[in-house]
Image 1 (cartoon, rainbow, N blue to C red):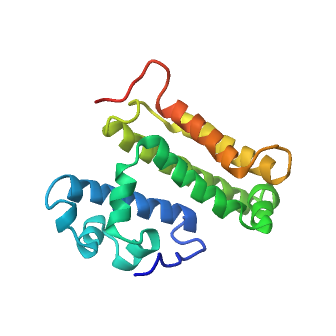
Image 2: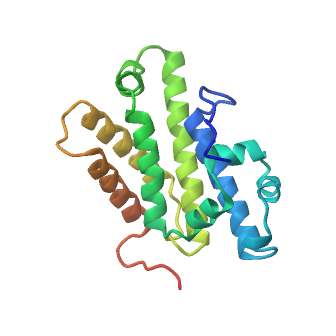
Image 3: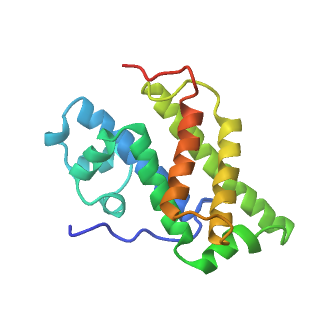
Length: 199
């Protein structure tokens, strides 16, 4: 397989394409952690076996990864590097088309009760995803065990606000600098002062 397949776009099942993609990626990584870290191990795992363990298809695998080695590399990255890679991909996707930025951060707000409900539901989906990822990180000893819902809600506001202001030209920074700042905020939430990862 020469490269990743293009993932579908649009809403399905109440979730955006970005939310579905992030959830699929998490399911593949969770399944890989089980298969690579236990039996049968990385060298004896196939794409088909990993996809079955994740409850997804091989086509969906190739929408997220090129090879099983890419999955192993993603699992090997420490928390900060994983968060950076995820946010860099998200920011590049959101900011890639100025029209999309305007729709996402400006035009959609306050249009009607129906669209406001849709906007808030999408934000709630991102909060749920961050909470799930944070709890999984806590279970692995990479993050402090706590209820993350309030912090995740505030963090989503930071993401939306900073990306909007950057796209409007109100923030003098590169996109990489914006992503690095968001990652620092997220890591500060996951690893508060006085807490250290389990060894």
